[in-house]
Structure formats: C-alpha cells, structure tokens
Length: 105
Image (cartoon, rainbow, N blue to C red; front, side, top):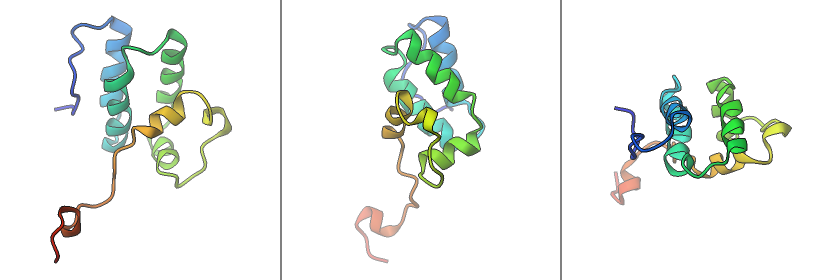
C-alpha cells in the first residue's frame, strides 16, 4: 500500500508518473512528505512546477529528509519556489506516546 489518498486514473501520464514516484521514494519519510504533497497538488501544478518537482525528486532522499526536518540548512536553490510548499505538507514525525492520546503513563 502506498498511502496515497487519490486515484491517478483521471490524470495525464506525466502527473501519474510523478505521483507514483512521490509515493515510492525508498525512504518512507520521503514517501509521506512528497506523496502527501503530490496527492494534494499534482493536478494543479504548472508545467514549470512539475519540472521543479522532478528536480527536487532527483535529490537523494537522505538529503531531502535532512532539509525537510531542519537538521541541515536547505540549499539556496530550494529556498524559494516549490520546496517551501512541500515542507508545509511535512507530516509530524514525532514518536507516538501515551501523551499524544491524552493518557498519562
């Protein structure tokens, strides 16, 4: 299971490939980050934004995770444009604890 919440049956081939690649990164954290973003935005992205997304997807997952989580500074080339929008879709990676559900240990 990919985690995607949308069907790709009704979108053009390039967008379908991008959606698939966003959910099949190799590192589950990046599946969630890019896949969640793609689910929400892939249909409305311009051709230039699709080019930019493919450029971002060409980066190593390990680097992307470090940039998205703030463990390393984001390279200047990604400070504007699509990358900040992708980061806005970043899921919460904090561990699930009893406090998360309002229960004391």
